[in-house]
Figure 1: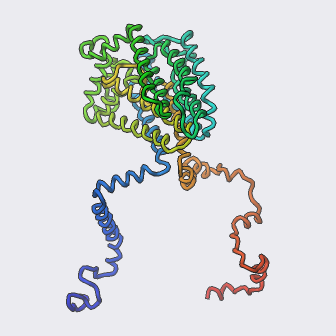
Figure 2 (figure 1 turned 180 degrees about the vertical axis):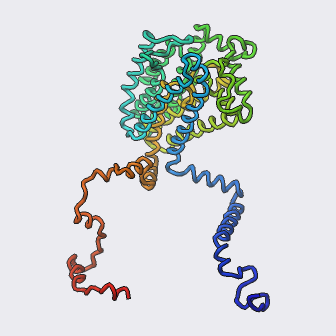
Length: 499
């Protein structure tokens, strides 16, 4: 023993529970401190209201309450959906591309080209001021109307719909930029009429409703019912934000239902689609073929899928597997887990967009954020609902995931606009400044290409003046007195000062 024991104590004063050797105590001090800290945190979480679950909910609320939460959610969800879309376009289009063009990467490379154009566009939009978006709405609306008129006279018809303008090896669908044009034009039009942050719904009659009606009529002439639904969702989102009465919503929905019924009766192929939606398995060889094949792909995936690239439905069984029904290929190859991840990402993206709209006081930002969120999230709901058989097949793509540059570029521009708005939320500017330079700025600084490297080098006198800290002036003294006192004070010898 290291010492005598008196009443349960050692002579050295340490209890038996303590370490006998100071070296052992030092060695185990870090682990012991961490263990005690973890036990303390666990005890605090258990004593908190609601226990462990309440502590987790409180932590989640604290995380969602940070200033840059909307910015990170929009950026992260967009990046993940875009990466997943590239991967699934390559998998879903490889077989048909090989049969048609001899190159299995043909459509994938075109999608990569669209992404390469869209990402810089998104980055530029994320750095543009709000005034730019307000000024862009009117010319973009004019270009959208002009493009839709060109589709009527010069457009190419495919599968019963006249949507595309073919320019050399590229095809453009003007109805996709029309969605972004309606978001910007409608938001600016209503924001200019706002008084104290509120807008009277009677001001919507002219010219917002005629403008929306003109876009919808031009799109319906091109026989694109799905895009018409999306345009009406944007319009209804604008009405909801400005606080329109319920009777106005009822009247618009009634007109929309009447127009939809007219279009279904006027076009036989739309009536066949409705029949395939109502009775898919009875018409599995005709109208319900695409719906049934999509459901078979979803069902064969199981919980975790059959493996990436191992889809069987893409071998000429499922039409438009890379665009309209890419969600079925996700369910087949990645299973239920993969589809739930996609739904969760769109849900988080919708939450971030609504959070941006709710945390601002500017009418234009609120209207544009809500309309863009309704466009992207609503289009995802319509596409997924058509794939799983809940809604009729409308032929609109899944945002950020499906193949198609005409739909991808306006979507990325709208997401860049949301990023720009998110950086102007309360406290976001301070959080960005405290975060320091980003990865791009740090990479440029490593190469010596940062902004400071292009400035004129300061002279030695200027450098001393910038780095020197100003001394506080004493009461009743001038600035020259401390300097004279410092001159009169004798300097200490370095060796004496060290001693």
